[in-house]
Length: 119
Image 1 (cartoon, rainbow, N blue to C red):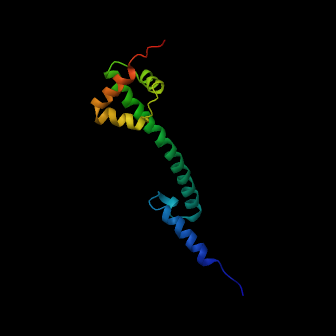
Image 2: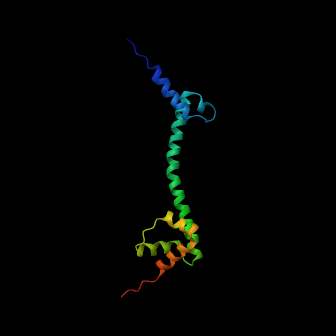
Image 3: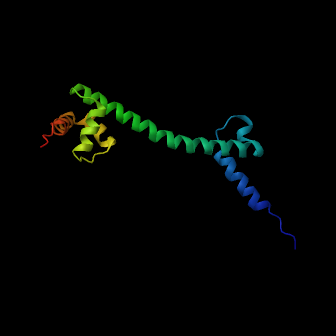
């Protein structure tokens, strides 16, 4: 008995066409161009997820730097002081603190920035 693969192939095509919904022109209609368009969209989505992380880190850095400059220091000096005083707070939390609770951020900057007396 001969087995045709029409049902699985139709299912596969329908699944890919569903992912291409909203694409422009033949990229959402013709199966050969749909495969290319969906693959390209997947690549761009992967790249976009990586870029999103970079962009957020840059945003956090800008926010921390702005808050630090209002208090008379710079981002690099502040981050260095955090490292030397063994304070383990990530940049996301620092940026959130700088925006939402400036008084707590100010206290943190003052406590970390105290000069360490060496013997």
